[in-house]
Length: 167
Image (cartoon, rainbow, N blue to C red):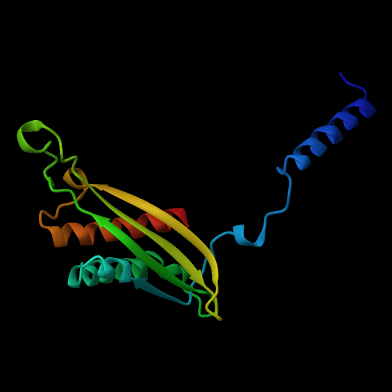
């Protein structure tokens, strides 16, 4: 057992070393947690439209918006920031039945994916917090939709449900 003065000296020394390494530094304002209540929800699919997705982008955006309203219904507050989901990319596998491609030579995988970023926007339009995310959905196991529009809707819903878990 260490004497009290020696133990406190070692404790101070360890804390000084951690503070010097930046491990006990205060959290900067930019690293604050994502807000827990939101005044409104919107989905930005302009990155998808720029890639030529057109009406398909609108379908994905509407599915994500509907799911935002369902999944975050208990977190509405008129004084909160706006929640904006920017969907930047959607990947739909060519082999929704989880086959391995032409003659078993690969190319499938049976996974759809979506990339985007959730933003908390303040009253003056400033970004208060951001949360980038990539979500993958195993089409053969999770989606009951065999067609691309149905799979895209299921993927958008899955993406938002993961946001709910993470935020």
